[in-house]
Length: 210
Ligand SMILES: Cc1cc2nc3c(=O)[nH]c(=O)nc-3n(C[C@H](O)[C@H](O)[C@H](O)COP(=O)(O)OP(=O)(O)OC[C@H]3O[C@@H](n4cnc5c(N)ncnc54)[C@H](O)[C@@H]3O)c2cc1C
Image (cartoon, rainbow, N blue to C red; front, top):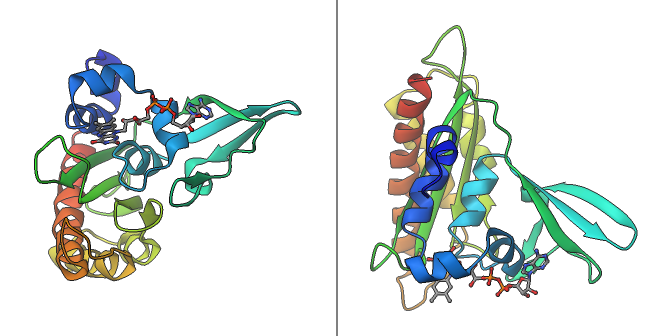
């Protein structure tokens, strides 16, 4: 959150860190530990997934690299084998896209009731057109979930309010929230809609400045 490089290149990550628990927890916890713990309510996992991060897993037989999207399996379960340790996290710095992370929580630094990370790359020739997008939802399923249908609606198209509304609607359908003490399933789907719209708009704004 204090690194100049991270603030400049990946403002999404710096912002996300500012609301991840308390300073004490942030000083103590590690990024690798957060990912390997695979809490579906992690703030880090959807943020890094939206950025297209990869992880290197090192075991007795050598290394393998997995896209973070392929790393998470289920509640608190990953593809890590019993002899493996996560040794590297690689975040591509293509400098082309803008990202945003937002969460809804009872207090700003609580675990998210819903968290959404969006990363968008705009067409070089026409800055109104979405070239590529990743929308990742946290805390609304057994693992961070991408809404591929929402992404497909926007990819290759001019970014319009109607398109953003439709992407938000599809994301809220693709989310898999459960009713718990934090809110009902329906409530969480509504929050997904709101956060998807807000993160897309913020990510587009950032991408336009590049
Ligand atoms: C009070 C509190 C509030 C929190 N709030 C938030 C929040 O708002 N948002 C959020 O995202 N997180 C939150 N967390 C989680 C926190 O950010 C850490 O991710 C979590 O505590 C794990 O921390 P750690 O790095 O010490 O991992 P550990 O507890 O050391 O490890 C977690 C698991 O991963 C394994 N592991 C750790 N590192 C590796 C590795 N390199 N390779 C293979 N396996 C490994 C360990 O064996 C263990 O099974 C909170 C935690 C606490 C205690």
